[in-house]
Length: 424
Image (cartoon, rainbow, N blue to C red; front, side, top):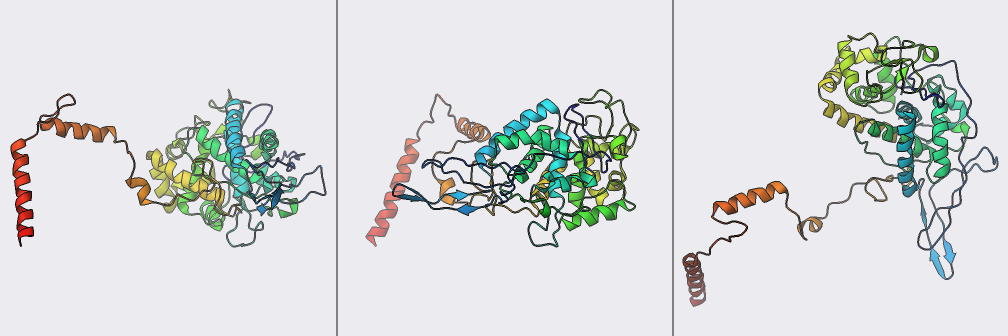
């Protein structure tokens, strides 16, 4: 988001976190491509119409619809969602390859954040309320100062978008962002998909919704921006931890050094100043380094320093500096909240690509499903049972001997009880 902005140079494989830049390149041919998947009885695909700069008359937004299609004498009613789950899964694999070959993790995180970070909880109507809706792909929004350089991220993802037209831009941006965190060693984000795209540049939010890096009152500014999105102090601190990725270049943003011992050799184009030593590794070193402030080659923005100055922020920052697992858990939750806030999902409950189900709603608990059938015991339980078995003199090769005398006593007792009841 505001404090997490990255510029990626496709030709030099460099990354740059920034808020403002005087160099902006207009984006061309990055609008949706129309597609018409074939319809078969075994696998019905949705017929979609998308906005395209090449076809001015096609301005229909991709959305959920139901058509009755007659095939012979059979009437079939397919359900159409915003994105295709199979294509989402394949796109994720392609994004992993892209990350490994271009080291573009930081800019992908930033792209997802900036598309989602325009959400205003005080506005009910979509898309006026903002949120992850793919609007950042339009030139009018790319020209916002906080989005300078994001055109390079769009250029990297455009071939994947063209390969998988059944994935909306909004989903693709969030998919790339979450995958970048995970592939950099961060937590797995509990993502859902099915976001609907805006179709026209007129639907883009106004400039000024994203946070700044050096405001006069950093704590108040961060709260103004993040509270507007329905997020909390914990979310602010956890999301700030993503600054563990990336670097800043002063010639583009006005922040950072031209070069440090950590950035002079890249990867990608050398130079810039990073927040952490391993600036392509997602961990909790961001909080450790800010707290110590011992290395002049590591960047600390005003919105970074305030995390250890404001009492409420400091509570979480101190914890994250020593408990990476806690940071990962909180970050994953906050990232998902930011990614979902304000988005319009089709289907409304969202789509999951992790468990193979068609939606992101947890499976209902059915007792019978878990109380019958063959269940494999854990190794620990097997060990415990074996120890108790051997304690009575048994072994895998030697079953316990039956106590015939005891068995006879039990049988006699049972017969006596039955005789008593029947006799009465």
